[in-house]
Length: 265
Length: 238
Ligand SMILES: Nc1ncnc2c1ncn2[C@@H]1O[C@H](COP(=O)(O)OP(=O)(O)O)[C@@H](O)[C@H]1O
Ligand SMILES: [Mg+2]
Image 1 (tube, protein in one colour):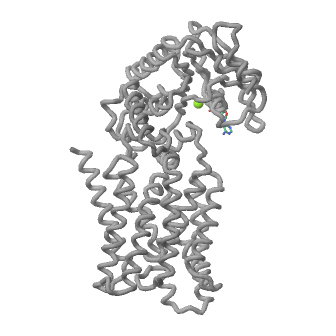
Image 2 (cartoon, each protein chain N blue to C red; image 1 turned 180 degrees about the vertical axis):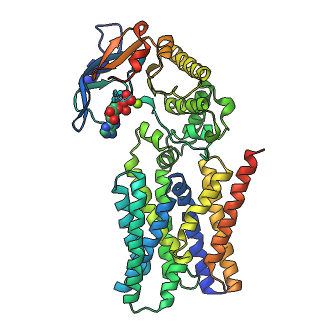
């Protein structure tokens, strides 16, 4: 399949996407932000359609929308239940806006399908480069903040008690989350990018017990998922997203069964 | 800095004061929590902080830790580094890390192999001191209440603080487990001269283990003799 240029590009792009999503996903899960990452995908969809409407790239539109909204969330009050309700209200608004922007723009509807459901053919080599730069930036931020971010994510109360600046960490994390949603959506589609951002991290939690191992398992599952998805999509012509989410869901339930089995042995 | 120095080098008494409050007052909006609180805590004290629910114990230690602002008054703390075990923690059954990894969270980032070695040593030491070595691979989510408290303690003590603050760490533990934990803290207090501030609702533990007691009453804090501490000092003010 690598004799095709578009497959090579898709392969490189998804490799970077999988690494960032798997890495960020460990922290999404430990910070209990699965719900927020879901909403950010929907906001990303509106951003992409907005980008198309005003003639900037869908990726730029997504980054704009997800960054602004994740920082807005970060500065909201810390009452988590109120947070969820207001977030879901906001997300409905953004889905509506996304549909509106798309219908106002003159682009064909296949464009919309790509944004929502992902595609392995839509990506140009320039976009691959952009994705790589963004992915490397996310990885870089994680290396810089690794220790304090791990402390805050796996023991928020302890991190506060030890005097960490958890507010700053939270904003840094939300920025990387917004970027990961935007880059992940390029292959997986905004409708299902949260799959890559939550399931591998959640599965890892059932099988290993240290932060570095959680990251390795999560990145591994995410990589295998996108590679397998690309390959199967290539030979069957079925949507790549179907295979990716199928694989991650199966892995998740296997992980869950493993955990339960271990509890009883 | 100068004031700090003179404060810590004071030679006029034998005791070295590590925390001193003068007319410390705290309000949340209009609600007065406490006013004109005065006390000194000396190096090596094993001191209990007692009073009914809502009397301001947690708020006072949060002010000491810089997590909450005082409204007025003065507070001097000698050692920058205090180990603090907060009252509530949210560790559920699914919590992924094991006890050793949980304690390790409090290490600083390093790339130097030398520092890494030193870090591994201090983890080993603290697990030994807190008698967790045998349990270090147990998932924290599945650990018992007493084991969890020991893990919190180990994490808080990792960077060798001179003062330890325990906020109701023995609440919700069985009597025997309470005693074990307190024996351990008492040992650290004696062996390493660790200053301990112990917030509690348990007058028996206060009497058995602590050498001084600070008691919240009528919106202020006063020192009482440990031998005079009685059960009704923990009941709600009417
Ligand atoms: N962040 C806060 N905002 C407003 N009121 C608070 C806050 N924290 C504590 N209080 C109030 O301050 C009082 C003292 O609380 P606290 O220090 O937790 O008591 P204790 O630890 O002795 O049970 C209580 O009336 C409590 O409701
Ligand atoms: Mg309290």
